[in-house]
Amino acid sequence: MVARLKLPSALGDALLDEARGAGAVEICGLIAAGEAHAPVRYPIANRAARAADRFDMDAADQIAAFKAIREAGQTLVAIYHSHPRGEAEPSIHDRRGHSYPEALALIVAPAAVRAARIRAWAMQASAPVEVTIDWVDAL
Image (tube, rainbow, N blue to C red):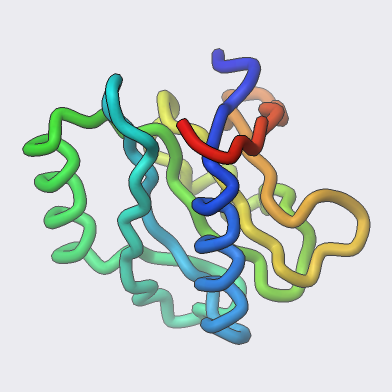
């Protein structure tokens, strides 16, 4: 399990901007990185019927993102989504729906009041474990 995640501050800003711009709809997407490159964000449309409190990645967008990741020689680092009105903590739906155990869950909560607005989680079988994010100017 990854104990710390290093991400560029600009990526965090972009995620918060995307979440704020979506209003009450959860955003979602993938974050991937290669050895010599900074992490890349791959936004994916949310097709969930209850998009205010769920996310269901558009299948065509998701396939295209995985293809781009593969072609760029990158590795999936995290699956991100937002909680428009809540905290950046995994919900029961997040825990049940996380299908890539090697990828972290990055939750963006633009309205969070108790803790950080972006938090990372290793989605362990027993319970999610928070992973510290180190925000840096550049990678």
